[in-house]
Length: 384
Image 1 (cartoon, rainbow, N blue to C red):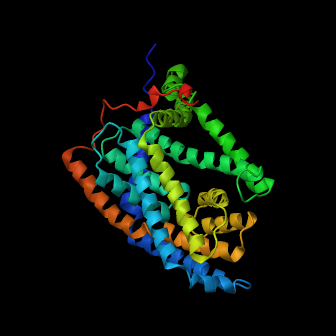
Image 2: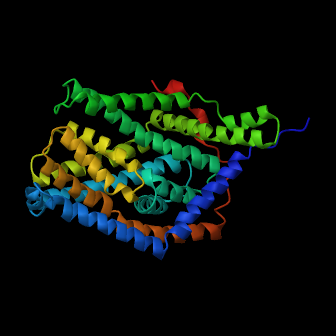
Image 3: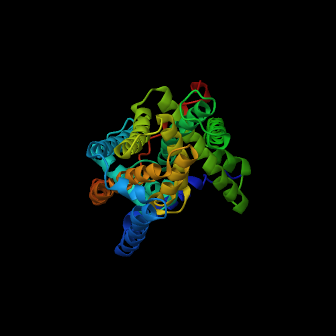
């Protein structure tokens, strides 16, 4: 009997990733998209920063916007810069393990250009992910390695997210942390976070390269075999990424600290924004409202603009924060978080294009045949 053909998933995935990343890097950042994106952002910003505070009953909010503490606003700026530095550190800790192909400068370019793509295009970071995949493939990284490490990055990032939600939710509900809150706004998110953490850990039990095993079991090259193999490719990539994230955490790699810096210095920016205009609520309340509000990033809006603002404001009000203070603090925080990386992101985007062109000239965009993801070294026993 003839040997079944190699799994098509890797090649097909590579082709899809190249096309998606190339579209964002080479085609979608054209004048038309930039103009329409700018128009949308301007309209939303005008409403959020001028229209919303002038709605009935919010006159004191407009007064507060014009009288913020300069020292605390400078603190917002510094905290947000440190947050972006943490994201670059996370990127290097996950993607540049044991390789000198991607320098610190290239890491910065990929990270900041990815943040720009996230703000201009897809929801939930998909635009930035596609651009990152494109750049990593051009650097010479194997497709399977890119896929597993992309998942590992998200597992580390959102692992911290979910652990924070569980800890703060339980602490607020049972009175261990100051601030309080009813069951729906504290325990429900905590329960969901715990379920997602358990589900992610369970994914690490999926056997390595399950898509290739499925291809061998199907013993054919027909449509059914191809569909089954492609369906198995997703859990295979997720499982490999979870195992790789477990390895990074177990080795106490700096990537974990980079992820914590990314999240918590962004939260410090929000905390400083409250202090700029009044008294900040308990830090545990800020953390809980922040992570609940960030769920609005899933909405198909550029950078979550509008959706995240409303989600954060609603979460703070639900946790007992004064409405006018919540509005002015959130809008100030979002001004730093959304706009600060925009100009550096545009510059990094054009720098990245030159870097990719140099890699191409050097022949570095050829896949590293001998490179293998370290995910296979990790098992669930590392997650005590």
